Length: 153
Image (cartoon, rainbow, N blue to C red; front, top):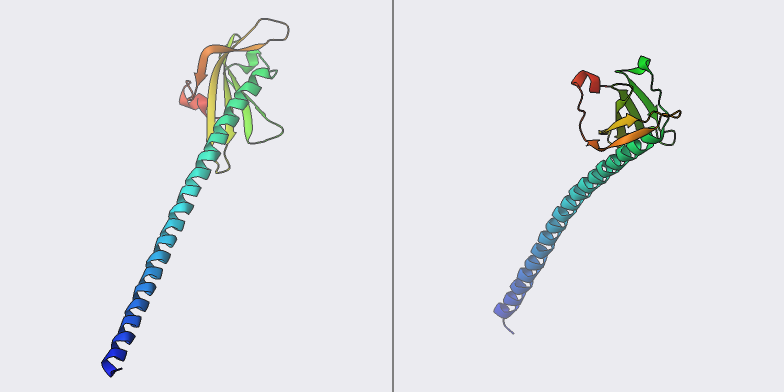
């Protein structure tokens, strides 16, 4: 065996080691990039779930508000009346009396991020001793139809 043969075998081993080390570095870089993008998408999914939950809670607040007994008096005209849901203080329902026959019901929910979701429903009142609230068939809104200063609670 000559010295040149031994020298070539050492060079081939060193080149193989460099290829393996390069493969490991590229693989770790790809894994790090994947982990970063995974965390970003996981955060977006969590925000979407929280927004969806707040949306559904606002709908529930509307349904709950229709079942409540509200003060339908002339002294309450053009004023908001609000009630917090006792089991979850981030949910509330409010009623704005436009007249003694018609009103606007608001369902409100706050997400864990602090964003508020509002839903509105036109309602009318049945002339009965219990003064039932009835939702207008096509009266659901996702914006406040009143003047801005009347929409602010």
